[in-house]
Image 1 (cartoon, rainbow, N blue to C red):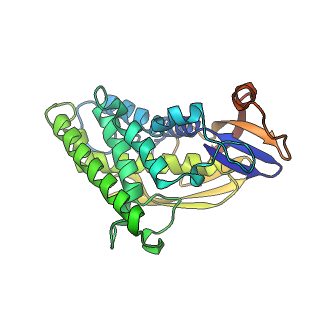
Image 2: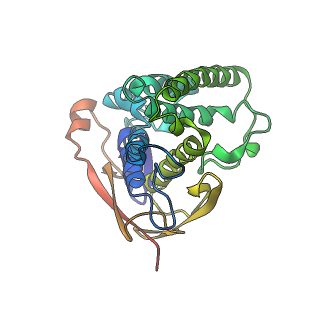
Length: 289
């Protein structure tokens, strides 16, 4: 759950709704200047690859399905806990549930989600990390406070688990002539990064869309062709430069439960929670030209 105060409102956005918005943005990613998913390097079936990448991006937070059905509440306001209020244990439990969910039928989907989850922890354990996969909204990993104790040990264990799973998935994909090239770095790396970029773009809107962001390491035509993408808010319009989408402007709808603040503390949580209609918060991505 993402819980954000925007002016006199409280936005309550489920992780699956946030991820679905990421998938929508990924499905519209690509134009003359930017390759769409599946188009970064040679592969036998780029449209099939594109579909699997978009599924992975749209479902990258699927491990939160069960949590969101009955979210733990904040004792201070009676509302669901925000993602940032959860412990490392709780977050890793969600990844351990969600990463392998699609592994049997969609190994490439599971592989991308695994890399996404793994990189969120890997920077806690590496002394001199490669920043190519640093999440665009979390700043330079070199500036993070060093992990220690239980946090460090849990991160190490989780990263080891994910790397073992990634090895198994890549071995499976390499046996399939359609998917062998998709598992190669020239395809895999930009798709992992595209998941991170789509996640960051969606989160920036979930945070209200009012802050300027600079997203580095954005794949344009290939993994060796990465650029900086800048977001400039102008009310409900988000100016993206350079512009990566296939429509200009691109209408964007974010689903959220919205409360006016102050609000009455909920009693009988589930009856109250299910009675709240999800509303559409409308944005528009554009080139500004």
